[in-house]
View (cartoon, one colour):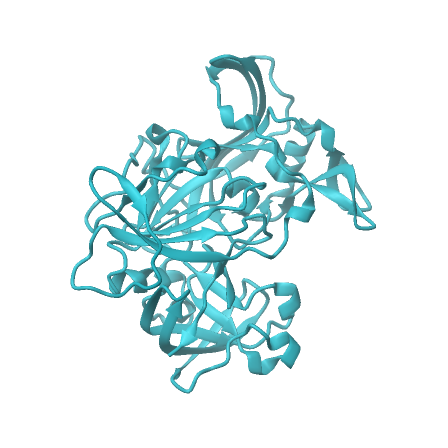
Length: 449
C-alpha cells in the first residue's frame, strides 16, 4: 500500500477498502482477523474531515522489518475526496507524540512509527532525516536513526534548533515547526570564487512555520506573496487568480532566503514556479506556486532546498542547505542514544524561538542598490524542470538496512530486520524511486500478520 509521508501529523492511518467500490478499493487496507480494535476513535482534518478507529496488529514494512503490536487507524473515505484523487492508501505521520489524534482527543499517547522503530531497537534514537533532491532527480531519501552528511552543503552551517511550539508552550510540541526570523529575496552575478549579491528584506520578526512534506506547495500570507511576486516582476492573472511570469525570466540567479534563527536556507526561485498547461500542452508561462494563507507552511517546493534531521526525543531539528552535487554520494553517521546529531552545531539564536507576544512586519520595497560579496553558492546554477508534468503521484520508496563503522560508511541491501538486545551502528534508509511528486510518498507493504 502506498501511504504519504507526513511531517505535519503523527499517526499512521489507512483508508478502509470496505467503504469504497471494488475498483477504488484496489491497494487499500482490508482489516485482518488478527487486527485488534482498541475501541478508540480517530479524527484528522489534514485531508478533509477524516474519522475512524484505532487498531493494533503486527505490520510488515516493505518486507524489511516487523513492527509488533503496532497502533494505527482505519478510516472511512474522506468526504471531500476519493481514492483516485488522493493517490495513496493512507498517511504515515512522523510528527511528535503530542500531535497524535489520541492525545488531542483523549490526552493519551502511544508509540507512533518513529518511536516504535526506536523501541523495537531498529534505531538508536527516535531520529530521522529527509533529503528531497532536485525536481529532476529520481532519488531522494528518508533516513531513520542517522544523518547523511554528504547531502549537506556546509556542515559548519548545519545547525540544531529547538522545535517551535504552535501554542507558545515549549512543553507542548505538536508539530515539526521552526521559527522564521527573516525572509529576503535576491539575485547574484559573478564568477570564480565570489559573487555580487543583491538582497531585499520582505519579512522580519518572529513567526512559527510548519514543515509539511504532505504539501506540494508552500503557504504564506497574501501580503508576503505579493511582495515576493513584485520583486521578481510577476504579473497577477485575474482569471487564474495567481501570479504568472514568462518562464524564460525565471533566472537561475534569483532566490528566496529563509532565515530560521540565524540559519539561512536559500531556495532558487525556479523551485517555486511551475509551467501552466493549456489543452494538455506546456506554455512558456509560469505560475508562482505559493498559496495565500493566514499561516506559514513550507511544502516540498521549499523543502527541496533544505536537508533536515528531526530528533523527537530532544524535540530538536537540525537544518542546512542541500548539497545537490553530492546526490549520488553517501556518508551516513548513525545517531547514538545519548548523542546529539552528528556534525550539527548550535548557534547564539538557539533560545530565540517564537513566543505568543512576538510580531512580524512584511515589506514591499524595491531591491536595494547596495551589494555585498560572499562565497559563491554553486548549486544555484542548476537548471530546474519547470514543467508541472513532473509533479505526478507515482513515487515509491524502498527500505534497506545499512551499517557503519568508525572509519567509513557503507550500505547493503537487506530483506529483513529484527529486534535485538542491543542497538548497534545500524539504521534504516528509504530510497525514493521518484521524488518528482505532488507529495512525498513512501511505500509500506503492510501485511497484517
